[in-house]
Amino acid sequence: MVKKNEIDVIKKSVQELRKANDRIGIETLKHRCGYCNNFMDENAPTDMIFPILDWDVSPWAGLFFPMTIDGVTLTAFVALKNSDAWKEGHKVIMLLCSEECKEKAMELIKKQVEMNNSFYKNVEELK
Ligand SMILES: [Zn+2]
Image (tube, rainbow, N blue to C red; front, top):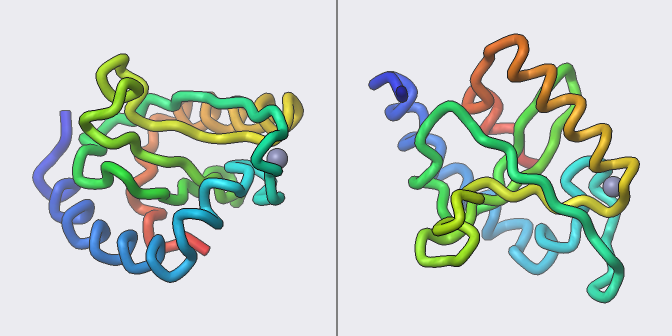
């Protein structure tokens, strides 16, 4: 359940996120690994994970956003609401360049879930 103050933070942050996404460019963002930030070749096999967050991500549909866990900033993407991914429940998508990055990202997300913290506080940190 999303608390009211969390919604306010998301509303305030969505404009910041949009600005950061526009500044960096979707073409750049979608070719960066969500864990190591390395460039991924268009034809290179990439891995994906689908973190489930504890608040409503719908205001961020179509945007990349950062999540800082244990000092490491991961980048994930919120699917468009009319996409197959969204309909299948894969609202949050993280693109990864390798099995190694996938494992490291999953480890951090698991840790975050165990600590029972929200990610939204880190939204200003998109680089
Ligand atoms: Zn990587």
